[in-house]
Length: 112
Image 1: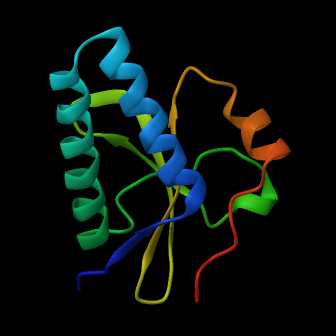
Image 2: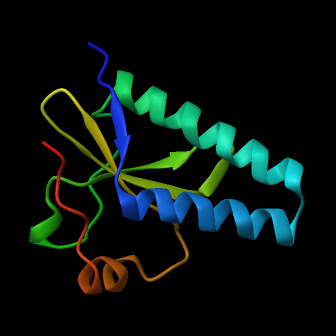
């Protein structure tokens, strides 16, 4: 069964910030390749929403799963499989202090 996906505002902001960083630090071509890879990974997760793992982010985030952006393995997609929709919650570099980021700014409320 294929699930549609939605990017929550925090994920949309993360995606834009990461693409901007790659465009400046590397090139526009790499930033565009990242955006394509991210959307392809979203589609793959929508088809197989349980293929990610459960990161250790605390009990408030039990429903959150994580998966790497294909081709950009250091960048993680945090998502929540739901009833008929996959919510992309955050898109963050794995070297960041993920527990602190999730503790200070809980993910956006699910869209119903």
